[in-house]
Length: 587
Image (cartoon, rainbow, N blue to C red; front, side, top):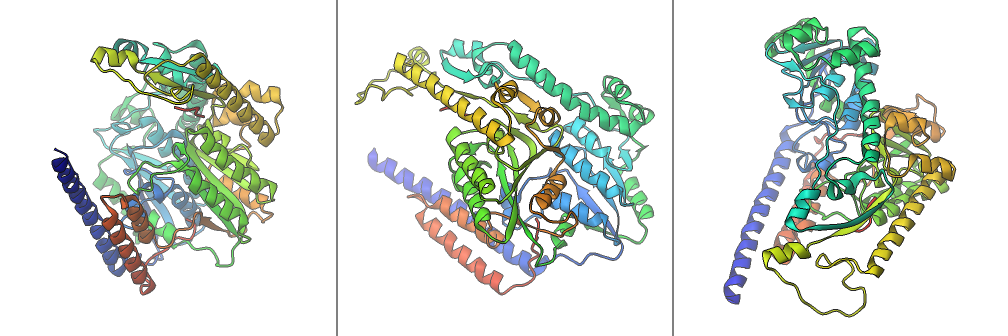
């Protein structure tokens, strides 16, 4: 039997390796074709920009392996915001055609894009927005909030406006876990740290309900303000209108939520009339053409996205994580680079490992200590460890709807002994060391083990609040008032001292200029750190690294050969368009 298992493993490994090799070959061939035939055309003298949000907007192309490999020019938040900012002052650009209504779009990201649209319009450019529907294939509230940044909103006659208000809903598993025989032995600091409530309760405890109600109330204010600006009424009238939602197309038109009911072809005809003689040009392509002067001061752009871990798995197809190794090295490199005048740290993270977060915290703190200003720009979420790593920054910027704070900690384990008994499974073994079984899922915490968990939670919580107090220049009592695991909107966080400025990347870049001693209108280069070589080269090297297991060692070597070949192609090609800016204790 051992022989046949060995043969089976070889066959499985070979088949998997062939599949990965085919992917690598396709990517390499596609890159060659792209480099030879897919150059970006110059911006026409009469231009109508286009932006289709159907595929969503990434914080970074690192989140999309195909974009990293250069197969798509998926729009990123820096592309979008900086591209619109440049276009607003470009006489060739007449306006923007916006397609929206579908795709994932967090409320804070919608708010940030809306701010960019408003600034674009303020320079005399027009924006027409079209949606088949708001809410049928995406969040109707966030897509509609974004649409209110346009001059006109067009809706397909069969669509609707899913403007319904906001709701946060949490599942509770206590009864289900009891039924299958799983014991939850966890604790937290402090009462508002609600992560374990889903496991230890069967309904929302009062502290969590109070905190989350405050959060949705604050976030709904941003939605009501956007609707009020749209219908020409006050916030109270907007809230009353939202309470009547969702709206059929005819009702939305009557309520002045949209300007016209029409199909996509009719919308395109109106665009041709409004921008007569102008050629269509994708905003992603326009952003790729935006290049500041080569001698412009540099501001490093570092992304901290996803759950915080000590290290990522190295696979380009893995989940996006904020791995401490990569982010810390990027912060260190930017700090030590004399050409870098300031660091812009863009965060979108719910937290994660305490040790990993502390590793990143140290590099942010060192940059500030050594005189290299760090400005944090928070996207949709900067909670728990996601806020911890931001605390030492010189300036913290967040959108009013950014989920912020959650200064607290939880930890513990699941105990499965009763489940194993029900299944007729037994465990036995040996150990050396009195606490070797402390984290075992097959037995309860011992008295010593439980005390160790409590000491760990106390230590981590105290470290968290102390470092927040030092970074934000808040006294111990003031930090404790906003800590205890409470989650805040960006607007409320700004009122209680956890956030310095409200806004998105544009505001953060302005703060980085100021912190670096640069004039407000100084052109800057926004330089991504860590700096990858060629896009596809980086992808192939990640691919090769992930493939270097015992089964895929040969594939790993092939991946490195392909990466070398891609470098050779890049050295002899000049048509590639480059963009200048471009559970142990858990926080």
